[in-house]
Image (cartoon, rainbow, N blue to C red; front, side):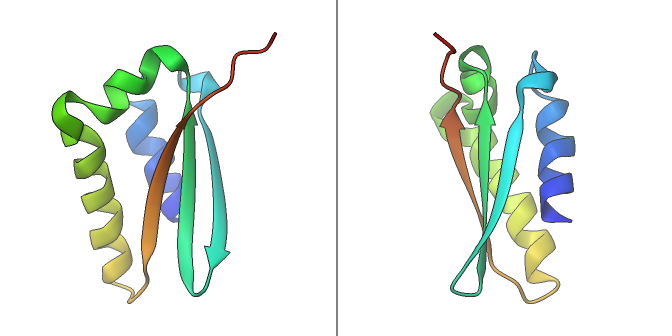
Length: 82
């Protein structure tokens, strides 16, 4: 449910939505969403001074807080295939 929300938000921001990868893990009662995007899309996700990723995290946190859950969002750059 959090994964789908994150995917919806990110797909509308990036230029390569087909290269988005999101994994969801449970860690000590906390859900960790790991977002991987293409190298060219990192700037679009992070934004100037981290404003966009901060906003994305706030949306996910607020949605999770309504249900009493804790969710964190980590961003990674996809490795280029050699």
